[in-house]
Length: 377
Ligand code: UDP
Image (cartoon, rainbow, N blue to C red; front, side, top):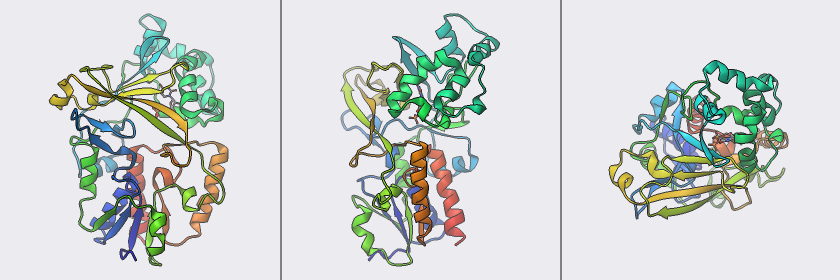
């Protein structure tokens, strides 16, 4: 039998933050059950033994937030570097800044444009973004059909394997559109990567001695050992919890093709996107660029890159992106209803809430869940 009154399933951001709150605020022991061999979920990073370069095992993760409460909370466990994410995109053999900003537009049109001229060009479709019913309509309303074809359409089809008109509009509003020369990827005031790495950040969050993490443990194998009345916070896939009885929720998975190259610098920046259909991968990550302040691996004549391919998730694959179509939302609502009928069970995090959460949103969700569903009960 597991003796603790609280069990958290999954040691990603949501699970680790909830466990930290239970341990430090309630001063209660808590057990985390994690099927992988490490903490941090998809934010996990490791130091490569050969080069000393910190790599993000599940693709690039850059911390960014506008939420002061989240920023204060996470800074208790780590300081952040002043890294600001810049992304380039290759289209038709040329390279442009992404998201679309005045520099992108000047490069596309081959001349200097004022912000007013840029606004006029962006509005060429003369459609109201608020009336858009799907990703394609939203993108065309925001940037016009030409830029949509050049930068968004093929990349989106590669990433989601769906027609953009069958995807929700809010996916594209993750990217700002700017008519100034701000080339940052994110608009948030707080940005960076943990000074000592994501793996150290999670060690710190989980350092309270009241927290026990059972690695390499699938919840299904210990489910019978949970005492009645134990509070279970489940951050795994909600459909898996219910043995897929109403059907499978659809996810995209990612495949990474890793390479260590005998050069100091492969692409000059951390992420380059590939907008063209003919290129099978969506982007290339080069991890040393997240830490230019780490002089030794940064100056080394070796670098680590990985090409990212987006795929339909099959059962054994990791789940990355929920495919938020109307049919999947309906299925998720059915599972939510089933979950609501089970006492002492809370679902949370990206997998448990079937949502495309950034790291700060996962922390905000966990802090809120602790305050409203654990502390007040
Ligand atoms: N997107 C695009 N071209 C790009 C980058 C993004 O079309 O070069 C679209 C694509 O539909 C993607 C969405 O914008 O799903 C959101 O991109 P974001 O970078 O936020 O996705 P993430 O980094 O979380 O994978």
